[in-house]
Length: 500
Image 1 (tube, rainbow, N blue to C red):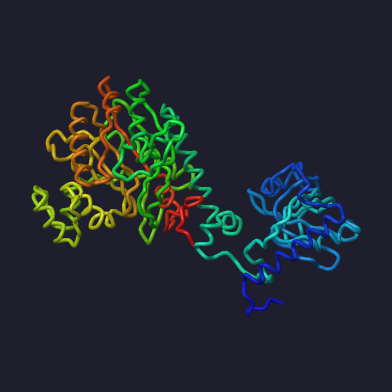
Image 2 (cartoon, rainbow, N blue to C red):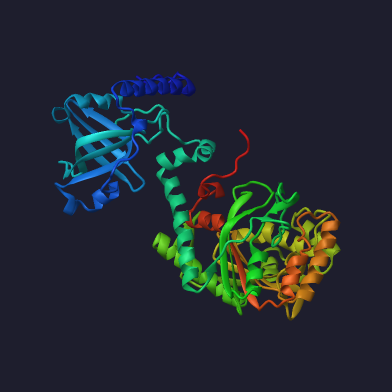
C-alpha cells in the first residue's frame, strides 16, 4: 500500500533497490537483459494497429517499453510503447510454463520483445497473443508513466523544471510534450521541402568565426588552441550566406544553431535555431510573399489546417498578411508621430511619455524599436508585416529611396510576437563601409551589441553582390507559436537551464 507520508526520494531509492534485486535474479537464471544485442522486429506497434485487417491471426515480432502490467489469475495483460504508439500484449500461464514466473521480475519502463499472433479482444482492443518473449533492457529507476485506470503510481512528472532537465522522461510520459517536439521536427522537414522545391540550395557555414556579425547581439567567445587566437560563436548566418551570393549561388539557405550571450526568458534561449535565406534579384515584397507561402505550406503539411488559435485569437495563414509601416503602427497605438523622433532629445522625451526607460547607449532608432517592442507588438495578433525600420538599427539593409532615415526592412509578427526579420539587402560596398564605421563608433562608445567592422566581408562585397532579398526566421519561435506553447523551452529538446 502506498504511504503518502513517505518522502518521494526515499521511496524512489527503495524502488531502485528492488529493481536491482530483480536484475540479479534474472542474471542468476542466465537471463541478463543487458547482454541482449538485438531483437528482429517485423512491425512497429502502430503498424500492427493500422494493418490489423491483414495481420489478424498472423505472427508478428514487436518490441517496446512496458507501460502497464495487469495480472489476472493465470493470464497477464500488458502494454508496450515504441516511438510510433502503444499496443496491448496477452500472456497465458499454461502456455508459458515456468517462464510465466519471469513476469514477476518485469517493471514498468523495461524493454520487452515479444513474438505472437495478432487478435482482437472481446472489448475490441487489438492485441498480440504472446508465444515467446525476451526482456531486452531493464529500467533501474521507476519511469513516471501516466496512470492507467484503477492503478496506483507513486509519482508523475508534472514539475516544469524537472521536465526540462530530464527531457527524456518528459518525452516518454507526456504526450503533449512529445507531440510539440515532434511537430517541430516535421516543421523543419517541410521548410526544407518548400525551399528545395523553389530552387534554394542548403549549405553549412562556420559556427566558429573570427568576427561574429549579422545581428545586434553579444557573442560567446572561445579560444582556438591550434591557431592560438580567439574565436566567436556565430550570432547569425547572414554574412557567410551573402558571401555565397557573391560567389554565384543565387538562392541559398541554412538552418543552423546560433548563439547570443544574452538573457533567458519564455521567448529567448541563448542557443537557438535560425533559418536564413537569400534570393538574388528579389526585393522586400518578394520575401513577404515567400513568408506567406512558407507559413501556409508548413501549417497545411504539418498540422493539416491553416487556422490557429492562441488566447482566444484566431489567425488564418491562408489569407494575406497585413502590411503596416512602422511609424504608422507607433502612431496608431501611442499617438507618437515621426516628428517626435527627429532628434535624440525628442526621442528620449517621446519614450518617457509612454513609460520607456532610455539607456545612455540608445540611438533614435533604438528608441523607436523599444517603442515597437513595448507598446505595439502585443497588438499585432494577426499575421502582420511591420516595415520601414530605422537606418541606425538596420546596418545591412537598403535605405528607403524617399525617406533615407529608414530602411527596406520588415519584421513579421503573429500573436504579438516577432517571427521573421527581412531586408532588401544593402549591396553597395561603399555605403556598407560607412554603415560599419557608424556602428564602430557606437561600439567604441560602449554599445557591445553594435555591429562589428568586418573588413573581410567588405572585401567580398567589392567584387560585386547582386540585389537580393534576405530573411531570417527563428525556428524555435515559429514552433512555439504554431504549437501553442507558452514558453520557447517547450519546443527545444534540451533548453539551457540555470544551475539548480
